Amino acid sequence: MIKLYGTPPTRALRAMWLLNELDLAHEVIPVDLLSGAQRTPEFLALNPAAKVPVLVDGDLVVSESAAIQLYLADKYGDRFPGGGLVPDNPEDRARMYRWLFFVATEIEAPLQRIASHMFLYAPEDQSADEIALARRDGARMIAVLEQHMHGRDFVVGTQVTVADFSAAFVLDWAREEALLDDAPALRAYLKSMYARPSAPATIAESMAALDA
Ligand SMILES: N[C@@H](CCC(=O)N[C@@H](CS)C(=O)NCC(=O)O)C(=O)O
Image (cartoon, rainbow, N blue to C red; front, top):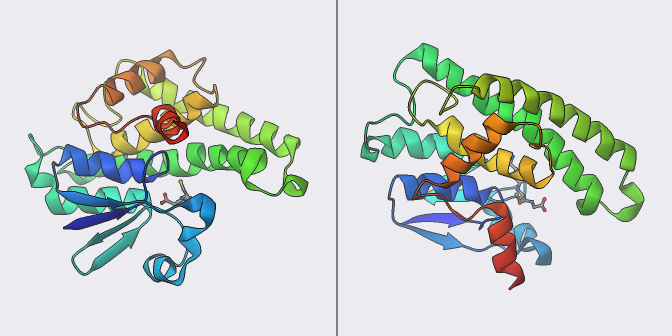
């Protein structure tokens, strides 16, 4: 059976969403990041970067949440009604890749900088200036996606694609940072993505479950 290492609220949420969307049987293996379980020799053998998620499917071990999503869509996408998870034609596929990379490098990277400087780095390495710059960079790029999403239901074309499951996770994170306050189209899009029956808990819901 497919194994997924990592649980929401981490980026494992991205992989879990595709597993649910494709109705694939899988086992979720929690990795306790706070206790350093990602740095055990067993886990480092799966991902030397010491990060979740990792997906194991037969002989394949794959890390990087977007790569996992693309793999699941490539391998099992024919299970999806309408088969639209990865567009057939190279032009729309290019558009999908554009937004996948845009989300990861232009929006997720500043969000990660904010998290690093707010609570992941040791207090002496944290910088309020860095947080302010990351917020500014993230907000500028969110405005670009907001503009793109006016009048659209999905990031590419008229059917859901892998890019939507990646973007929705990152936009939920941005919403938590109050970076969607001026982005009504993105808030509506996020709401519709998380209304899908396959959607895992949002970041806030997962955090609340952890705290309970
Ligand atoms: N680019 C990677 C990033 C993975 C990542 O940063 N995962 C975090 C949780 S969301 C993690 O495992 N952090 C553990 C650590 O940094 O020690 C991906 O998209 O999979």
